[in-house]
Image (cartoon, rainbow, N blue to C red; front, side):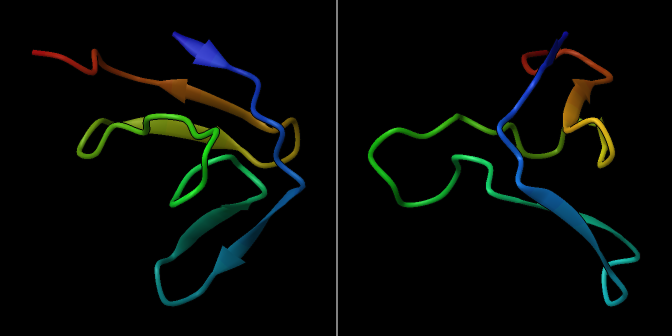
Length: 58
């Protein structure tokens, strides 16, 4: 359950205590990904890989 997003980079956000991806096609744009909310995931900022750790639908 993973995909290789076109992330430009990820930066650590001290207020969240986590890395924040930059450049992923999410938000209010025409061609966007659907991103699940409340699903555990792992972001590898070095490789730009996002891995879902549980099913998106229960």
